Length: 88
Image 1 (cartoon, rainbow, N blue to C red):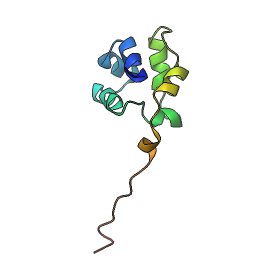
Image 2: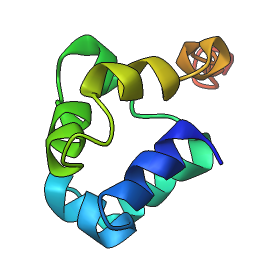
Image 3: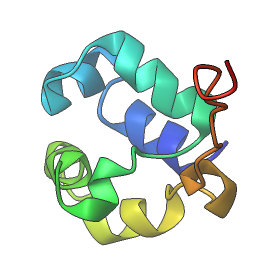
Image 4: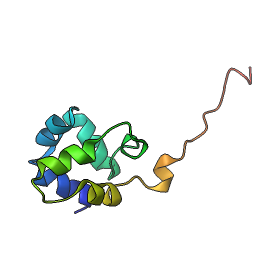
């Protein structure tokens, strides 16, 4: 089981995690599918790790979650999109 799954289970599951973070359960399932927190956690746009750590009652820290649930390098690379209008 990965760190993200452990953290989500520790706070009460997907629905509880979604409530804590102020997002939909579908958003949490997207994290689980990718196996990482969203990019916005690492750009300072969101603070989900801090909220989850607080809700865990000390079972894990935000720093631990951020270190163990970060996106892989390939997740952060953008795939160029062809401009079909330019070729017309």
